[in-house]
Image (cartoon, rainbow, N blue to C red; front, side, top):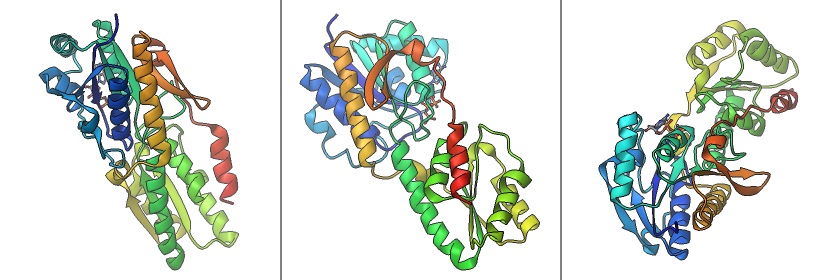
Amino acid sequence: MSIKRIGVLTSGGDAPGMNAAIRAVVRSGIYRGFQVYGIKKGYEGLLKGDMFEMNLRSVSDIMSRGGTILQTARSKDFATPEGVKRAARMAEVFQLDAIVVIGGDGSFRGARALAREGVNVIGIPATIDNDIGSTDYTIGFDTALNTVKDAIDKIKDTAYSHERCSVVEVMGRDAGYIALHCAIADGAEACILPEKKFDIDKDIIQPIIGCRNRGKHHYIVIIAEGVGGTMEIADQIKSITGISTTTTILGHLQRGGSPTVRDRVAASLMAVKATECLEAGERNKIIAEKNDRYISIDIEEALEMEKHIDESMIETSKMLSL
Ligand code: ATP
């Protein structure tokens, strides 16, 4: 069946570059002769039929903006068998031949549920966490890394002046990719990830004291939010080492900001690949970046794929902070 009309939505946590992806879905979709409907607030908007036809100018001047012009949601109503059925029925009412879902792993599970109800879906990976098994890269990761890097650079300036230990909590509930990349980019003395059990003496106190004895004047400890207890860890560092210790929880500022070139290009190329797949008659796919190429993977297969933190990066981070 050839495609006449598609819907596009953003779902789950917002990520810089989602707008660039929406723009490229709309422009490349229209280029291929599709009508493109923007669905508001993710699956919530699909359930309500809250959607509108977009044109080439609907996506003017959005590329440089963080967030998502379509807005996003974590819909509880959708995430039930009855909700998925209602959403699939609404896709039929609006005669959507396919829905492009821009979001993270949870959003793809929602897309798979829709696919099982007969809706043709295609996923574009966008989450600052870079934690989707089927793809090397997710839209938003690079911008978040640069935001954290800028913040830690500033914290380091003041940490040096006062000879402090700075504990910085970064995003990552289940995945430590932001923490680990920033530990390397910022030369952190210790980095604690949710994927790995840690021992405060071995993984934090010993590196700090070792660095002090080798002549360092300040110390950065990065903790991914999923580890938990950041304040308590900072208290312990202070009480065991006697070093003045501050804590910064970067929080939601990591989700915002104008997307980097990396994110704009990845978003644009993934979205163009998505509409290309739809034009070619592919059904129920996830777009992925693999070895610098963009490919499509069957959604059932994609959701079985796992990603693991690269142990050698952990060792590299430790080696370079000596
Ligand atoms: P992020 O990684 O940035 O948090 P995400 O896409 O993983 O993004 P989630 O909140 O996990 O964010 O998922 C987004 C929405 O997808 C949920 O609110 C829910 O409506 C839907 N969803 C998630 N899992 C399922 C599922 N198993 N079945 C149906 N719908 C789901």
